[in-house]
Amino acid sequence: MRSTHRHSPAHGLDQVLAAVRRLRFERHDIAAQLDARGRYEVPLDEEFPLLIKLFRYTSKRHTRGATWHDRLELFMPLDGPARFRMGEQEVELQRGDLLVVDNLKLHHVVDFPGFDTRVIVISFLPEFVYSLGSPSHDYAFLLPFYSKVERRPHVLRARDGAAPAVHDALFRLLECYFAGATRPFHQAGAKAFLLQVLYHLAGHFRASEVVKWEFMRQQERSLRLKKLFDHITARPAEKLPVSAAARLVGMSAPQFMKNFKQVAGMTLVAYLNHVRLANGARLLRETDRSIADIADASGFSDQSYFDKRFKRAFGRTPKEFRAEALR
Image 1 (cartoon, rainbow, N blue to C red):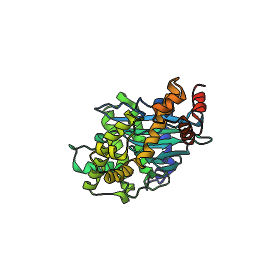
Image 2: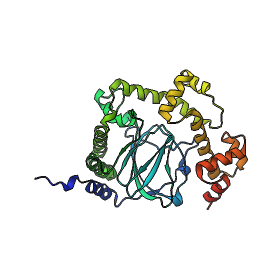
Image 3: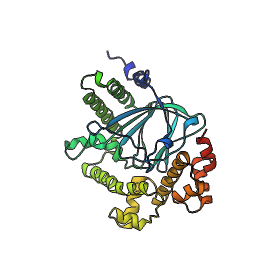
Image 4: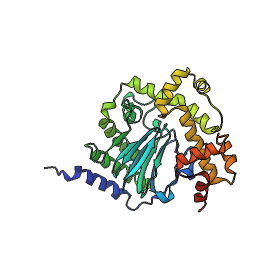
């Protein structure tokens, strides 16, 4: 008779914890790691575009830095709780919950009193799993990332029925990935176990299943707007009316506004403000430029308005933020 212990959520999470027990967790401060365009860039090997990072988040080291990126991402707190914001939606996570990140929405981990947890972050490029040359059925592995037709974040809770299978596949993925070259065919093994994780996630979120043409349409919509995202992060202070943004991606203004909200999770104006504030935070940390100069460089011609928006976003004034960063 098969033991039921192996399939209990606690045991599945225990396996994951065992896989990382002797590994180092980096202290994470996203605002200190944004690139010059305000993005959190992570180098990925073209031949093996999969990266697993182990982070330790704490209130003492945490500053908000909203970002977006091309790579797909899974986020799991090991000690919990954690709060994660994507666009205009905020998700509360407990230990062992697995979040499918909306990568093109501006997103960030939310600080709160007593925040202290270790986190596993799995990043990979979509083409690692599915591209034009892949077998057509491989698109199903990416459904959890592209098919949120019900407009709710995809979260696998540790208590959900699919969690033990996902935790088991994650345990094997972590073991294989961190064994590195000491394990034969470790890259092939890591990809195989990642596909297992994605397979179980696709099955769990089957209510969001879409036919292949709809999946391709959503993926194309995201890729089409990527040119605009790059433009905004390269020129955060530039005035960009809806009409100009729409022309940049070859859409009519109404079509653009609808598509942008679907992909980014917020309006263009809200998105621009988030990017500009994140750029301002980076300049406050990394330069000794005056706050008035930083406000102007970030697209705010009025410093008092910059101060007001910055405090609303970060919970402290630019002056307080800079003083804290220098401690």
